[in-house]
Every structure is written in C-alpha cells, then in structure tokens.
Length: 152
Picture 1 (tube, rainbow, N blue to C red):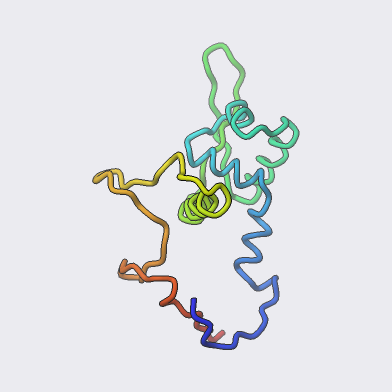
Picture 2 (cartoon, rainbow, N blue to C red):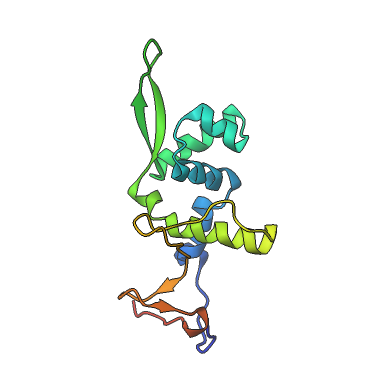
C-alpha cells in the first residue's frame, strides 16, 4: 500500500483491525474456525485435531457461540444421548478469505513450505489465491492500493 496520505491516529476502540484481533486473536479460536471450515463440527473430533483440553475447548466454543462465530446444532446418534455440533454462522463464513490469506501467509513466511491444501474453484478446478479486487472483480496489486479517509 502506498503511504501517500497522513492518517490521524485511530483509537483501538474504533479500529476494525484492532476489534477483529480482539475477537479472533487467540490460537484456539483460529484453530476451531479452521476445523469447522474443514467440516469438523463435533467436539471430540475437533479436540483430537487441535489438541485442546476438554475444558479449553468447552470454554472457547461457548464463547464463540455467544459471539455469533458458531451456532450449536443438536444431533443424536442411535442409542446415544443428544449432543451438539458447531457450525459456521454468516459472520464466521465471511472470514473465509481472511483465514485463507493467513494460511497462505503462514506457509510462505513462517513454515517456508508449500501448503498441504490449496483453494480451488469447484467448477473449473483452477487454483484460487487470496488478494485484492475492485467492486467489479478486477485484481489489484498491493502496490496500487491507497488508504482513503472517509468522512463521518
């Protein structure tokens, strides 16, 4: 992004990035979201995949339901008691591009490795990369972006 304007300081209370980091910024929340995006919705499976203790996972799932990041849906297998699975909400579903970008960034800059999964368009099978696009869908290079203050 170009640094062509002087921005006035923004209070963390009014900054979307700061508020998103506050909501999503711990490891367990991101790992739980990853699992639910992958289709893992049940407690025990999720616990095995992310390595959280029962207490940690229970606490975090309750918080994520309260914050409308996940919704609880009941299910019952034959002969078993009713249980719950956790599914994406519209709010968490909209995090898909953010999580994909974090995954790609983590592989490139921390693991220095190729990802084990790739996003592809389901009809064509073509790889998809996170990035910036205009409202019309035209790709925009990061160097061609500027921050523009909006009047309030």
